[in-house]
Picture 1 (cartoon, rainbow, N blue to C red):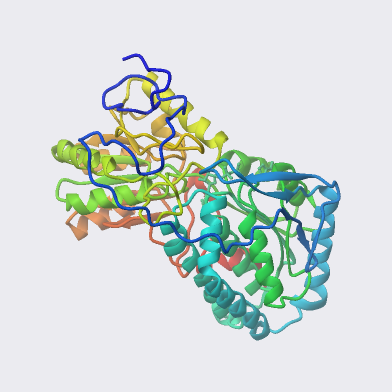
Picture 2: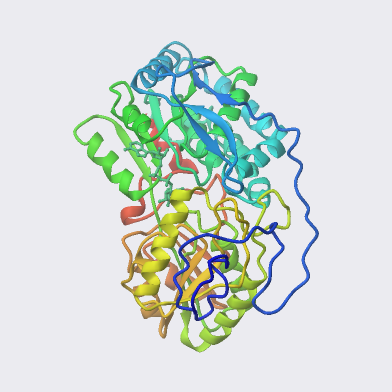
Amino acid sequence: MPRKKNQAAITLVLRDQQPPLAVDHETVPPHDRKLDFGERWAYAPAPEQSDYLRIRPRYQLFIDGKFRPPHSGRYFDSINPATEAKLAEIAEADAHDVDLAVKAARRAHSRVWSRMSGRERGKYLYRIARLVQEKARELAVLESIDGWKTIRESRDIDLPLVAAHFFYYAGWSDKLRYAFPGRTPRSLGVAGQIIPWNFPLLMAAWKLAPALAAGNTCVLKPAETTSITAMHLADILQEAELPEGVVNIITGPGLTGKALIEHEEVEKIAFTGSTRVGKLLLKAVAGTKKKLTLELGGKAANIIFEDAPLDQAVEGIISGIYFNQGHVCCAGSRLLVQEGVFPAVIRKLRDRISALRVGNPLDKNTDIGAINSRVQLDKICELVDSGLQQGAELVQPRLRLPKKGYWYPPSFFTGVTASPRIAQEEIFGPILSVMTFRTPEEAIERANNTHYGLSAGVWTDKGSKIFKIASKLRAGVVWANTYNKFDPTSPFGGYRESSFGREGGLHGLLPYLSLL
Ligand code: NAD
C-alpha cells in the first residue's frame, strides 16, 4: 500500500508491511484521532496546570552550594519533546568545572559531612524528603515537560518514590552499625554519579540518598536531555540548608561524565545508563581503586501461562511497556505467551492498544506521552524497520499523531523468532515483541535467551509455578501477577549485562561504605 505524502506514517499497520519510518504526521491536536476499530468517544482534555511554573531561561552549574556559570561559557538547549519548543539553556560543564565540583565535594566530606553524626545527616535527608513532597506537583509537571513521562506517571509514581527514597535512607543514617552488625562502616569519600534520562529525579534520588546517608559527598551528572528537574532539586538542597559542597550537580554531555569518572579524587562511581557506556566505564576504572556500580539495560520477558487471569495479565503488560513508552530499563519488552491462549491474548492486546491515548503528556487522560528525543525516535524506527525486514509482523492502531514533537504509537510484533534484533536489543520505545512457547521449560529458555537479566514477569494462577519459574529465571527482579512495582526497601539490579552491584534497600548502602 503506497504511503501518501501527507498520510500519517503510522496509519493502520495491522498487517501492513510498510515500514513506519518517517514521522510526518498531520497536525491534529492530541486525542483527536481515528481508531482502527471505528470511531470511539474521547475524554475531554484535562490538562494539568503549568502556567505557574518558573522555568529559568538559563540553568547554571550547582557547585559548592552556589549556582555558577560554566568555565567554557557554553550552554546547550533543553527542549520539550512533546512540542519541540526550547525550554531553557543548560550549562555545559567541562573538566575544569568537574574539578571544582569534585574539590568542593572533597572539602565538604573531610570538613563537615563525614564528621557529622548519622543523626544529624539523617535530619538533612528528612528535610529534603519533606521539601520534595511539598513541591511534588510542581516537580512532576516539570518532569513531564522536560522529559517524556505522562503526568500520571511522574505525579503518581516518580515523585512519591523520590520522596520515599530520601525518607528511607534518612532512616538508615544513624543505624549503619545495626545494618552491618559487628562491623564498623566508613564512608568512602566523593561519589561521582551519572544518571540517564528515563527517570531523571528518581535516579537522582536513588543515587544521592544512600550515598549521603552513608556519609559520602556527591557530584551528580544528569542526562543532557533531562537536566532541568535536577537543577530544581539543587534549589531544594539550598532550601534544606545542606552544607555547601555536600551535593554538586554538573550538567553536560557524555564528555562531562567522562571527566567525572576519570577524576583522581573520586572514590566511588555509580552509573545508570546504557550497557554500551557501562562497558566504557568498566574499562576506565580498571586498575584504579575506584569502587563501581553499574545499572544498565534490560530486555525483560513477561511470561503468560494458559492458566493466567488473562485480562489482568494484559493490563499488566500494557502498564509494563506502554504507560512508560518502553523508556524503562525493566520494561516488559518481550512477551512470551503459551500457545493455547495466544489468539485470545493477541485479540485483547490489539483491542487494548487501540484504546490507548497518545498525546499531551500533561493531560491527565493521556496514556502515552512523547518519545524523549529525536535521537531516541530514530533508534526506535531503525529497530522497528529491522524487525519488519526480518519478517516479523507489526500491529499498530490507526493513529494520527501531533505533527510537532516526537511520537511513536503503541505497537507489537508477532512472528518474532529468538534471534532478531527486536528480540535481543533494547528498543526503548512502546513496542512489544511477542513470542509463543509450549512448555514451562521452553518459556524459561526463551526468557533467559538474552545478554541482559534485569527483570521478568510471570502470570499464572498457580503459586507453585511462580516459585518454580522465578527460581530459574536469570533476572534480578521477578514480578508475579503484577509488574513494575518499586519500593525503596527492595534491592534492584540484574544479571549479566544488566548490572554490576545492587541499588535500593540495605544492599544499596553497601557500595557507599567500607566495612572495617
Ligand atoms: P546513556 O548510557 O547514553 O547515558 C547515560 C548517562 O551517561 C548520561 O548522563 C550520559 O551523558 C552519560 N554518558 C554518556 N557517555 C558517557 C561516557 N563516555 N562517560 C561517562 N558518562 C557518559 O544512557 P541513556 O540513553 O541516557 O539511558 C538509557 C539506558 O539506561 C537504557 O539502556 C536503560 O536500560 C538504562 N537504564 C538502566 C536502569 C537500571 O536500573 N538498570 C535504570 C534506568 C535506565
